[in-house]
Length: 333
Image (cartoon, rainbow, N blue to C red):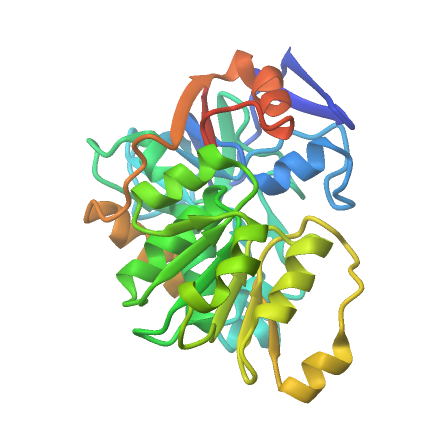
């Protein structure tokens, strides 16, 4: 099969490699569409300690069942499926309490085992979910990042409250769409790229740059900012979020841009600001993401585009350099 392989910082190659071997509890998925995730861009740049080359990345994907192990049940050949790439042990204390996202023994497809930047990928059948045959494969591929967004919004948003989101990339835009579904009030999205802010505004947000937010805070949030979701995760966004949050407010931290940041912790203490880390999603978050996609509640027009897998190295380069007009690029093997 053809695969896009991460060979080290800023090096991706297209190669012919053997099809994945199949365990008895696995299905072989013929990939139809796979999204490039922001965390994979960090990996591409060499900023991810958990992505070790050589590696086939890719964890946001949709495809069809091409083969099945002998212990598989509930699926048939040629079923269209989306895959939850988070493989939990289901036996540790966190799993038993429903917190599979912080499973002590978790593995993630595309990180700890070969992913979907390839023609085929092997996955545990329990992680594959059937979707309508006519569902657009790229839309279906958003189930995983949408579940990330749903989880983050649930952690911080109270219905009807206003919301500030840092980042108009895919996760930021999906947080915006999820927050609208969950009854948010005014939503302001902050980004440095005007093209991305235009996407956010088309989806119903108010788009501003960081400096505009500083100047217009009272106008934008006359009642204050009770909840902030940081989908960027760099020193600048984390520091500004701390200054912007209401006393008693909540900052949900999703972005993994910088591993370490210097923050005004005494200010956090005195203002009783809550910092909440948000990582992946629960089974329920993933199920809800699938339902929103089935209902047509997620609009991908204008901010996504699709390209062939062979275009993968160029697509990664374009995204990290900020030269793509699209926030999300899907690759099609």
